[in-house]
Every structure is written in C-alpha cells, then in structure tokens.
Length: 267
Image (cartoon, rainbow, N blue to C red; front, side):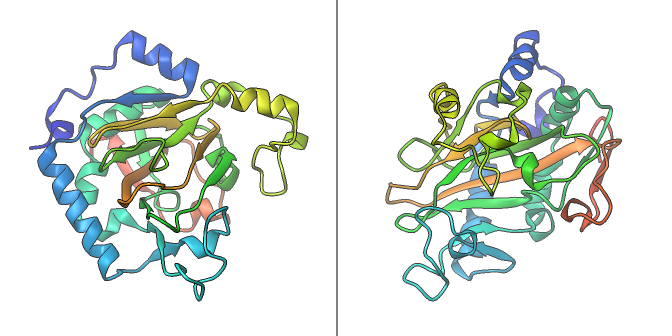
C-alpha cells in the first residue's frame, strides 16, 4: 500500500494551514512511495511511446520554445497525456487516495469535494529539446466556476529542478486583485510593466523530488520553464473543487461530468 493510501490524511498542522492560506501553495514531501512512482512512471512512459491518445502536443499551444506546427521538427512532441482519470486504475488510485482528497477537503474547508475531468486531469510532460515555457498565469483564467477556489495537486514522478522546468510560484498572489491592464491578451502577466516585474522578482522555485506533492490554489500565479536537461520530466496533475462550487453550465469547465468524491473526499 502506498504512503498516500496508508498515512493519516488529517494530519495537516496549523503551520501548514497558515502557510497555504498565506502563500497559496503547500509542498508535502514523499507522499507517494517508490513502488507507486515506478508503476505510474511505467504506465505514463508506455502511453507516450505509443503514443496513446488523447494527447496535447507542444505545437498545439504556441508557447515559447514549442514547434510552430506538428509538421515542424519536434512537432510530434507530447505536452500532456489527457484524461488521466479514465486512462488507468493507477491514476485513479492516486487521485482518490485519502491523503490527497482529505487534505484537499481541509484546504478548501469543504466536507465534500469533486475532481474535475475538464481541467488538468493529465500527465504533464516536458521533453528535452522541444518543451515550451509557460508564462506567468493563474489557472482560473481558463476555468469557469461559481467561485474561483479550486486546488490542483501536482505529483512529481521524478525530480523537478530549475534545469528541467520546475514550477515557479509567486507566493501570496492568490490573494491579489490584479487589474486587467496588467495582463496581456491571453491573460498572462505583462512583463513590460514595472509593477509586474517587481512582483515576479518575488517568485520562488518549487523544486521537487520524486514522490513530492504540490497543492496549489487556482488563483496563484505560476510559471514553468523549458526542460534543459536530457531526460523527460513527468508530473501527474489533478484539480479538485468543493462539491457546492459548481462549474458554470455551457462552459468548458462543465463539458465532462465531475467525479463526486463523497463526504470527506472518500469515494
């Protein structure tokens, strides 16, 4: 049984709760054990080798460093293995592990939560040579819910460093109200503005070891650089929300039914 499935899921300290409220993110070390990591990595690597659809390719996003089209050199580089929850039981086991779901319940202050099948729900990949950089953004810019309060859970399947494109986070930015003029047409922070550059200068690198898990708020600004190493980086990411915080009908957030995880986040 994995660490995530066996440890007491209700052991967040007051310090951890204050940290998440202050910073908008929390790292829990070694939440997944070596056996589970090996299984997750093997399933993910096999799906990439085929490759097994549905996939998002680097060329699809047009971010800095990505090939311009799928016909260009490197255009067949995957960026995300989509629909992870329905891909394999090992992903579902992780996504519904009590240490994950009960922690999310505590951080959201909700007794009942749901997993979104529309957002994240994927294996994020960064390949050497053709991986893109994602500029400063809030995930909630893509999402439509009654309230902008969701939590994503990011599991590192291998080490994540500044060299291979670990996340950078602006601590406390989930509590800021950013004027629309400080964002560009795609809702990234504009780096040509002094106020934004000053904010970005406070960012922290979130380096993770294999098995470490990052919980972060949907309003926190974050960035991910290119993978400058020689190894592919893999991360498993799921997003959760309070069951009472429903997606807005007719939006992409409501396209697929959410997974009701029941009271206490226990399926």
